[in-house]
Image 1 (cartoon, rainbow, N blue to C red):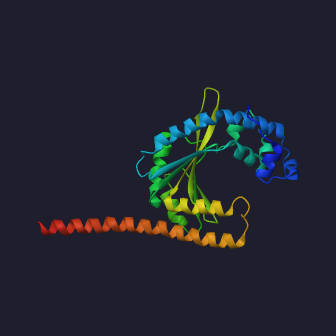
Image 2: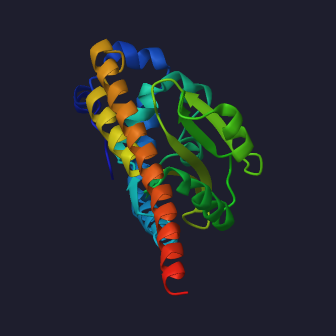
Image 3: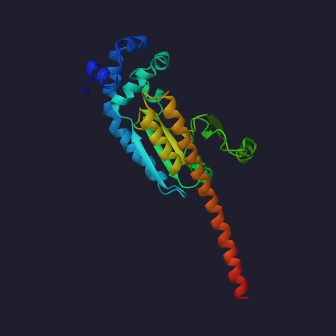
Length: 254
């Protein structure tokens, strides 16, 4: 039987009794969720590996990462978003459908425009449960040009002031005959991944509003965006140089 010690848990995640009471959640309910989730983690691990095996050989995929949320982090998330989950009446029978990122898959690609081909591959393999979200930083795109590019793609554009860039997909998965959950898939460039990981380590969970860190992470974000633009430029340059070089060879041997 998997048990969760309340005092140790609150100390580990810096949760006060006052805050917990304010959420309206019940500890016994969370303990039931924790015990049940510990049992299904092996099933989630197998499903995550199955998803990775389908994605790893998709053209333009550089690498695939996956993670299954740890049981203690699941409970910590429910408490941090307490009122939201209390309103949804979260309990041991429905939490695997309410918490949509028990399994997280990260697809990394090299060039900024690769995501459109990846988008087609992902939506060909799975039926998405929500409209995919394209998260972009303000200033990254000419919005009119972006709308023209996306006219044949079913995708919601989300403008992120602080630079978060990623494409999000939500798919369903049956981990057993009676249990169905959701899987969150994210696609981003390797430069976007580097910035996002560093931003997460530096700012979360306690420095989200630190103005000094926010300013310098924003500068770092712009550098990552510029690196993606440079990658795209070099990609186009190679194509141009390759074509002109081939034309010169053709002329010499005619």
